Image (cartoon, rainbow, N blue to C red; front, side):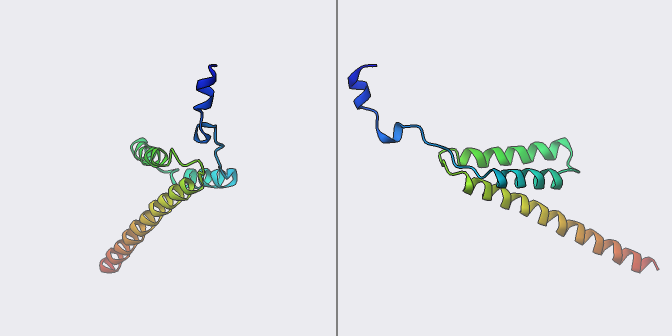
Length: 101
């Protein structure tokens, strides 16, 4: 290596270590698998796409804690929307049952 090249190396060029909480990763994985167990391939592909976008947006951030939190919040929003959808379907089903009696 040329000595002139070595002097041009800055502190930002030095390899940084990535910070990841493996416990949070394992928790996110198990929760995602549990929440998507009834998904078809199309829905899984859409989820994969959204998660890929999030990962791409946080690619320069070496502390992945924020990324995990963003993905976790996204998954919670999915679960909440499913619960509200099921709740509204259950309410409609109950209304139909009441009207039918």
